Structures are given as C-alpha cells and as structure tokens.
Length: 226
Image 1 (cartoon, helix red, strand yellow):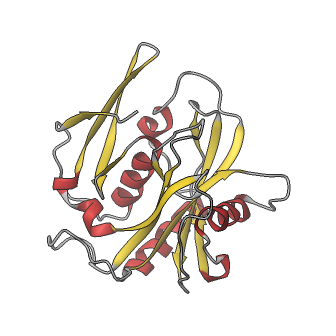
Image 2 (image 1 turned 45 degrees about the horizontal axis):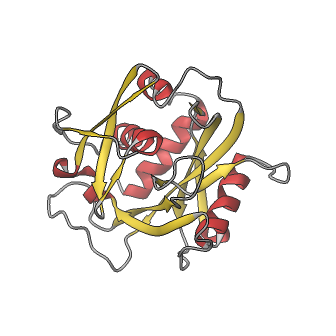
Image 3 (image 1 turned 60 degrees about the vertical axis):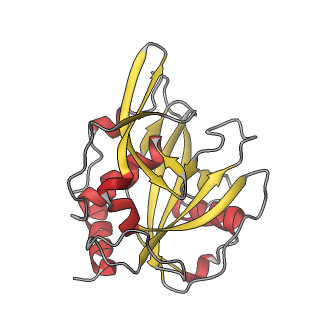
C-alpha cells in the first residue's frame, strides 16, 4: 500500500471516530488551565522535494516529506519552536480545514488549491497557550513554492523527510518541569533543531497509527529547548 493510501485510510479512520488521541498526548503541555480558543494545524505530507533524506535506513519510503515551520523567536506563544503551519480559528473561517489552509497560506505562501484534505483528527488541548487544536491531515497533490511570508511570524519554512523523523538516531525524550509538574514527551532532532511538545506528540502519534514507527530508545533524554 502506498504512503498516500495509508494516509487516506488514517483520515477515514478519523472520520469514522475510530482514531482516538491517547491520554498522554491530551495531558501534555498542560498547566491545568482549560483550553478554550479553537485552532487548527495542517499536517501536510507530500512527495519529497529536491533535498533527500539524511537517513539511509530502509524505513518508510524515501520520497515522502512533511511541511513544518519554525516560529519566530519574538512570538508570545511557543517562540522559536518547530511547528505545523496553523493558528487560531477566525470568524471568517468556515471550518477547521479552512482555518488550517488559511494559516498555512499566510505563513508559508502555500497554494491551498493544491492540497487534498484527507481528514481531521480529534482536537487536542494545549493549555499552555489556551488553545484546543484540531489537526488537519492533508496530501500535497499539486505542490507550490513555500517560504517565509512574514518574519514576524516564522523564522523558517522547511520540508522534512519522514524517513529522517522515523530514524531511531533522531528520536529522544524531551523533559521539562512546569508549575511543579514534570513533562516527558517524544522529540525529534531535525536540521539541527529539536521538535518537541505538541508538534512532536502529534507526529509521534500519527506515525504510530500509520504503522511506520520503529523501536527507539525513549531513555535518551534532553531538556526541552525553552
């Protein structure tokens, strides 16, 4: 089965309600506050661009990647962190899908008409920023150039080979203590940066559900880069 077919099947599972968010993911990054503001992020998979995967391990197809951004260091929420394109839902947005596509266009210059929506996953609370985030799963059917649109919002826009994310050498556990509580969650090292928190949790969950993940050493820990 192709990567596209597997992603489409995952979207169908989400639509049917048979794809749940695990408790550790729902609890992560929480300070106990109630997440109220609706938001959406775009998990955009597509055929790899001209930059090949670094990993040579025979994991998932070598020609598959996902679009990510590094948030500007000046932002009040999650400054400098690697994230999916996305943000808060605005009154003009007809749906979570519309919000995710609008934010992706504003942050990366993506042409939304080239994105095939495969489904939406269950919303996840991110109480540290008071958002309830709906991940939108997409396939980049007709690719368009992407880059930073506003350096006040994003420092980088880049595409990451999924094979590099899956490589056990690039996986570890990020730890942080907030308000007397210890957080431990999955993390990835890519392009000299650490992906952790909500983004890493969603990535890890989706890769697990797709059956693409391979065993990795969760005892390798690093402090979360905050």
